Image (cartoon, rainbow, N blue to C red; front, side, top):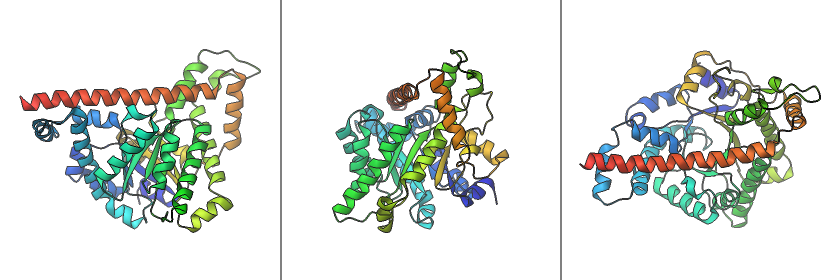
Length: 369
C-alpha cells in the first residue's frame, strides 16, 4: 500500500493540481489514478503553461482559428476537451466512491469574479459543455461569488469554491452550500447527487504574513520571528474546526437524511513558497478525515517519496488560536491579510487568463501561418 492509499484510509483524498493534453491522451493520468489520485483540479495558470510549453494543442488551435473562433472560444474548446478526457479517466473513481471523488474541476473566467449573474451563466454553460457527471465548476469565494454558489448548488451543479482565505468568508461559503441544498429540496429536487468542496488556500497566507512579520518589532513578549511559517496552518486548522461545527447538529442532519454530502475542505496552494520551509509543511499537518489536498506534481512527488501519513488536522487548535492572538498583539490584522490575498488571488488568475488568451492568439497565428 502506497502513501496515497494510506492517506485515503484516514479519510483524505489526493487530487492532482495539474492537467495537460499529454497526461490525458497517454496513460500518464490513468497510471496516477491507479496509484491513488482521486481527482484533478485546473486553473488558468495551469492551462497557460500547458499550452505555451507544448505543441500538443497546435492542430486543434489551427482548426479553431480557421473556424473564426476568438481566443476565448479557442481556449474553452481545448480546455473542455482535456477536462472531458480527464473526467472519463476518473469516472471509475466517481462510481466506486458513490460520487464523492473522481472529479475534474474547470474554472469560470476570472474576470467574472465580481459579477454574480455572469458567474452563474458561465458556470451553467461550462457544466453543460463538459457534460460529465463528475465535473466540478470552480467559483471564487468573492462577495459576488457567494450568491452564485447558492444558486448553482440549488440547480444541482457540482461546485468547487475556490480562493478561500478567511474564516469569515469560509463561514459564508458553507452557509451558501446549506442554503443551496435547502432551496433545492424546496423545489422538490434530489440532493443526493450534488458534490462540493471548499478550497482553502494555505501557503499564500504565510507568504503574506511572513513579510509583515519581518517589518514589526516584538510586543508584549511576542517575537515576530517565532510566528514565521505558522499562520497558514493555524488558519487552516481553525477552518477545519469550523467545518466540524457546521456539519453537525439538527440542520445538517436533516440534509444528510436526504442524502446530502459533506462539503469537504480542500487544501489548495499546498506547495511551499519559502525554500527554507519543509517541502511537506502544508501537507502532513492537514491530513485527516473528510478532506482533500490538491497537490502540484512536485509536492505530490515529495509526498510519495517521504510523506509521513497520520491524522493531524485536529491537533493544535488552541495553539492556532494563540497564533491569531499574537498576530493581533503585533498589530497584524488577519482581515487585512485575507482581503489582500483575495484581491491578489483574483488578479493572479485574471492575469494568467489574459496571458493564456494572448498565448492562444499567438499559437493560433503561428500554426496557421
